Amino acid sequence: MGLLEILEMKSIRLAAVAALAAGLAGCTWVELTAGGEQVQYASQKAVEGCKQVGKTTAHTSDKVWIFARDEGEVRKELRALARNDAAAMGGTTVSPLGPAENGEQTFGIYVCTNGG
Image (cartoon, rainbow, N blue to C red; front, side):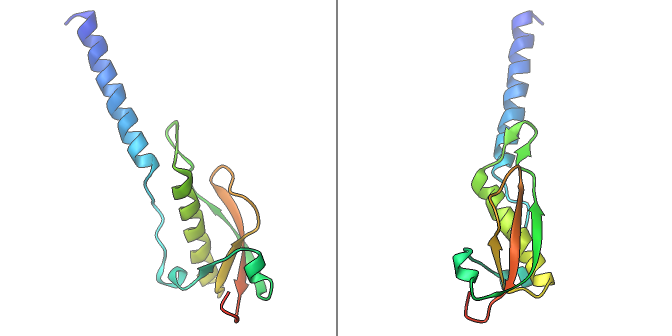
């Protein structure tokens, strides 16, 4: 086997690994629980009349190997984790208390009786 063939094989392997990692970067791994499905996501303005019953900081991976995951999928997972936590704490609504950074975001957990 010549040097050119070896380099071609290594390039193919690297391309396959990169494609796999890039494909996984868009995957969602967190699912809402039955309770989490009942919890709403709202802006801070929307929860002004609600009672805050707690906080939660959601964590998820924002990278697969060296590849950044899709920001929309990371946000979706963070919201799902917060909604699941809120359900366990008796909350009806979650609202972000700050931006998502490095796969982490803090949410307020609220009980809203006005539909929020």
